[in-house]
Length: 404
Picture 1 (tube, one colour):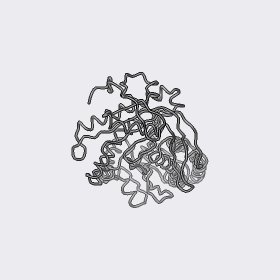
Picture 2: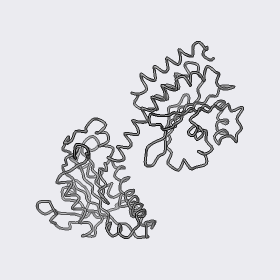
Picture 3: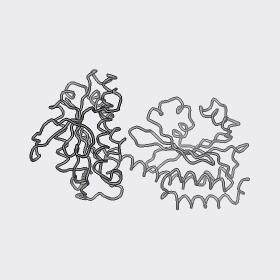
Picture 4: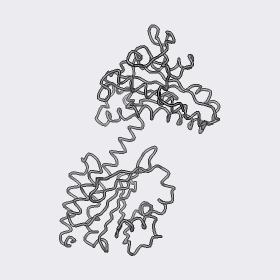
């Protein structure tokens, strides 16, 4: 049963008002899609599926789709940058809508399978009418939104009128959620998840810092000066990316936060707090992350995929202590970082890895919180650190992890 023609304006106004009032503040876009799909069916618009196809500003992903099917929760699928060159996109209705910025309405009984690669799949699913609308956001980027029905004969004029009538309000909701996600993801990529969330919560005043207790991981690539003088720029960047791909996923897998890439060095922290209630828990997580990074490095070297075929080596130091965490910089350019004596100490100990030919060194303070055998390697004077610092090398580093 379709809405009467005189009722379509009422339905459009009702749904548009709901989108404007509830869409922007919804916890996530999937919730908006689920509720809108149900509301459209309640208004006798026979909707079997609705999908948003939003482009992403992300280093690894070109876009994300959110699909709602009647009676099911919305789900997300991410696509990497290769999708733009793959055959299924070139044969997709989305490409046509992206390029033309015009709607595309396909009644499957009139559309041959050869028209688009997705047609046989839609037909097998029982879809009778497929509508793709362009979504042009406030930045001028073209996304897309698709609707599908299984109604015999497809949608009637009134149904299409409602879907097109609510489109402006829905575009604004999609734009707001897309901008929110882009901002959160870009901040997460460039300053880290924790600092990014703090910035979004308004912690942007210069000098707004807090003292935190944290396990500190500092990782330094060996022979980077020599490598940078012998490798071409592209090779050097590829090498650094492979090195960072050993370290960063290991840190994140154990709840750590990568704060800085300092040239070829990585600074990460495992703050005590919600995730880790005690220093011991912070230190165990940091130790597991260090082991994971070194294990990934060993696998990389065994594959022998480095530029020039030379094995990579890096040194990791682990320490636990106090740091100042927050905004530093000038009025026009600030950095959300962590500083303090214990951060400096961790970076100095990392330099000892090359001198002592050890992949991982820990301080006495860290070892006191870690239930793991370690060999004492002596005490050393560290630049800028008062007194001598004892360092230790954990034994049987891979433990129960099978060697790569």
